[in-house]
Length: 387
Image 1 (cartoon, rainbow, N blue to C red):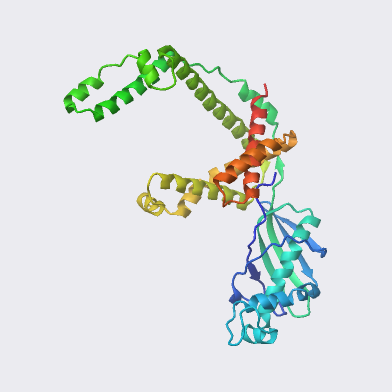
Image 2: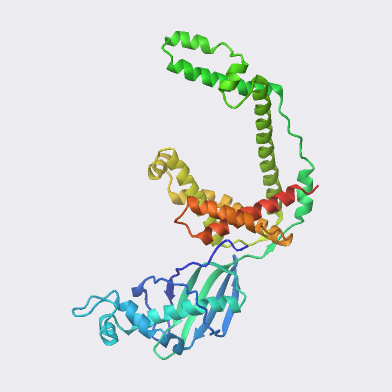
């Protein structure tokens, strides 16, 4: 499953040439990915780079740029104020007089590459992810457009013998038990907390309140019923014991799953692109900021208090971000290898529920997230059942 997507922006960078070139004067331009695939598939050279990136170099005939001239002129003119004309409806000659022919060529190049890029990656079987970096190497009126595109790709993954690793860890599985002493302590803590609340609201003096809290409270049937949907004290004890068992089972399962994935990630071979690692760190940062906000604190104030910057945190979290990225890649690869397809009905149901909670989020993004979570769970369940 590809869980990172081609996105809409990249920077144009310039190199020297004998031709008319773009210069740094024009800064960073938006790269808009079009959904329409062009039939043009220019001859390109694909070069593999380190950290799972590839470089695509080639040329586009100038005729492909020329197809976008009218639209390019209109778009550039939208940012021009000229007496007697509405923005977006200024004649080409006047637009060129205002900004120069290079800006029009630049916009034509952007649009031509935007249209050609999907076909370039598809026809060359490039599993591209993230922000493509577009470099214009040659741009002149009437001449082919030279370009270089560097993009991250889904990395190649060599998994270890994950079944054997999982089997070793699962062999250490211990039976979860809950003792009567643990149950009584939990109930005692609940009763003491409930008693403290009553004392706090009482009109008794402080010394008397402290004395009362030292006396253990006996669980009676009436008290049990007052705590919730319990028939008597025995029913309360039985349900508390079961809930504690379920919670212990959950923690044990999570620990075992974590141990299995740690073992697999330690032995797997892959070269994770920086964009995937940075994406994981972005997620960690966002979650951390939310946690700080829920505590009623301002994140910037918190950073000032601990004398760190966002960049400091990102640097500290990078090892965890890389490990998290590798874990996700491993889970995806295992799910594919074992043909663990998520249940479509479950995906639809959970996507609908999440969409209701997050109406401003793209439904496709929600669906992809749900599918990833369900696929991960299927892979982890498969691993922990190997004995």
